Amino acid sequence: MFNSISNNFGAPQIQFKDYQAPNYVVLNAKVTFDPTNAAYQACDQLEITVPDLTIDRSTIGGVFVRFIETQSYSWGDAIYDGGTVLKSWIKNKNTIIVEKQPWFDQNGPLTLYFVTMYAQLNQGANAIKGTKQRLTVTTEGNYLRFSSDTFVVVFDHWVFMHLQFSSCSYAQRDLPWEATFEQMPANVTADVPVPGGGNQFHQNCFGMGECHIENKIFTMDRRVMGFWDTGREPFAFAFLVREGEEPAPEPVEE
Amino acid sequence: MIALPSIAFGGFSGSAKGVTARQVGGRSVLSLKCFPTGAATGAQLARRASLKKISKSWKALSSEQMREWDRLAEHASGASSLGQKAEISGLNLYIRLNSYRVMAGESMMADAPAAEVAVPNVSYSQVVVTPELVVFGGIKHESAPLKFVVKMSVSQSAGVSNGWSKTVIITPGMEDDWGEADVTRLYLKTIGVEPVPGEKVFIETYWLDTATGFTGLECRDTVVVTGESPYQRRVKATMDNLDPTEESHVSSLDVDFSTGAPVAQFNAQCLGHSNVASSEVYLDQQLPAEVVGTGMAIGRSNDDDGHINAQSYLVYMYNRNGKSQLTFAHRGGPYYTKTEVFGTGIIY
Image 1 (spheres, chains in turn brown, yellow):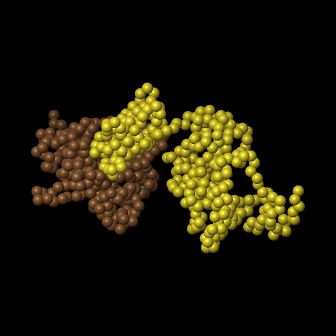
Image 2 (cartoon, rainbow over the protein chains, first blue to last red):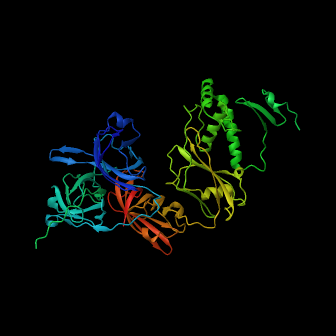
Image 3 (cartoon, rainbow over the protein chains, first blue to last red):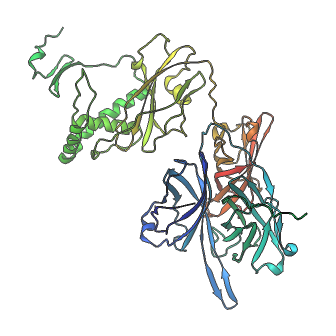
């Protein structure tokens, strides 16, 4: 865990969870900023100054950006949150860059989600294959279902997670969701963006929600109106840092 | 023979019949006018024309701009000779720095840089020259605006100890590719013949600051050409590897497996095809078994209708009949055929 030293786009200090290997870095953070501020408007790319990283440059990774939009009607509120993924890279040991795009400058405040792996190339060895584990999702009455491409690849210090939402019982569609992810390590805690879902007011980017993972429990309360629209395929794509040691398993009584 | 007054008296300057005498930094220097030998190559002709153009452009500068170049020249140094540090004029510095900039594809600069720039020296761990491969490895990376300049000679007898006059510019400025500079194609294009095993190649390299035209010290090296080398090229899939007999559905491709980590680096501009939510790529060689499998990468639509939504893609990678196939198969997010798949992606 470390804090950013400064940034050039008017965001507050950013707290990063990190796993830093000699040849790659996994970073998790969430920060919200106002795109109307002068610093953001003056910058060409978003630059975050940080304490020394283990790597002095990286290839490109993905950082998600999201805006919140609620419209009120006589029958209630409707959610039209949106966003997309931005390119990000480590420029040097002390600087993380995120590309600046003007797409959502009118929709602020904006939230950046770092659920990102920064790697290096020409490291003298080929990529190492991990082991895919399909996620077993448990909900009361099995109301929430995911596709077969919902899985984790678990390593000692971090996890890759891909979720692809499939369907939900009608009665639960507008209620908060809670599910257990059996294969997710308990020491992962993160807010994870959920791109996808229809968004009639933002049909260039479509929807983006947010879910929370903690102690193997997935929760998601806020979802766009068109979450289950055909062909909009809500999903999550995240490299997540594991914190500390895995809690010891509960003792089994003889 | 041309009769010249003794230069011991100094103060002599002027030209006569191809001999020029001049005073440089208190030294008397005599030089013979040089004439190119042999037919000039296209590159040489272009460079000479460029130098002529740069020289002429000096006259278009304002007096203030010329003074700034003279001021910078007072602090910059020319090549040393006979133990004396040579001085350089503002005009010559203007020509030198601009010729380097033009060589690197930059425009001429009228204003002198604020100060001389310290450019680092080249450092690399190996250079391999075989008939099929000319590559520098383990280059200590320098960031833009520095670019790597390579001069090399045609291979010569291994007994030749001084072949530096035979070197020509192989690349006027390239960025190292993660510590590697593969100049095989550039060497063959420039020199015209493959290096001959057992012969010697002379190599000069330096960093060029393309913002100012200043260069680092030239690093000189020689290497005896070998028939083959244990040097292993990185495992990559690029447009250069496409199988020309198959139809691929990308307009750009750069998948790099050299991370030494549980991810590959995916970069592909997918175009889609045939109303299926995927793009196929066929390579002319097999991928190593250890990277054959499945990857997952993020994508972002970039079609002509302005879609910018995030997507996720499974990347199936497998070998068949001595070749390999990569399939970028859409999974999450609204699908649009034109999508850029990018970034680090897990493989399993």
